[in-house]
Image (cartoon, rainbow, N blue to C red):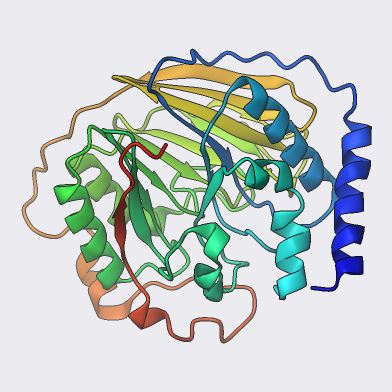
Length: 333
């Protein structure tokens, strides 16, 4: 990318920094326990507009108080054009401070994402549409491509869950299984994913797609979060619902999470640095499956597959050979 273009993008980050020179008081509610696994959560980020940069700066400011070592991305990582210069404008520049501090980003694919993002090294996807990785001694993450959920991916997921050997199992992907926004709950995905989550003791699930923050009341013992306002926003879109434990739809937002022992603590934070939700979740145990074999809906999916439209046709080239990986990162938190 031309140096002049890169300087222009960095100048926008500086402008956003001036705007946030006196942010709202940053109250850290997380416990900061020794040897904990600490990470950020962002979703639906890649606009390249000023609010995305402002969220990036708040993340960086909180990083000074809460030194997380990685960030998980809920998809829609880049909207619109996805040329090399767009990766700079819509990812590298907004999170430059964190990238310079060696914070790692682990991306999921959303419906606006070109699947070739899996080849972009800073997204740490290792060329795969879906993958898993471990942090610390007992936390494993399962990253799914919810836009194209086929039987091969489901079989891979079950094997990864079964063999994970981790106390904490955290899944994340773009489309929410439970939501009270414009898109609503993705029940077709729920019927094939939730039985596996229950059977193998998944504790927490993060998604995006809806452009707000929502914490769902525990569903069958699993805690679900929607964090899709890292760059986009649908103001006032969170509908009144019995599903909602807490929500925030008046500004952009992100999350910070800490896993220590048998507890996961979380804090949801607005673009201006205000805490909008916080809490602690205990580890759950696996629920014994009452049905042997395939989960409900799996046979139908085996026959037909399940694909959602990605924005931009013809972007699935090469996918079938680029699916599924796992990584043990040990103490590299």
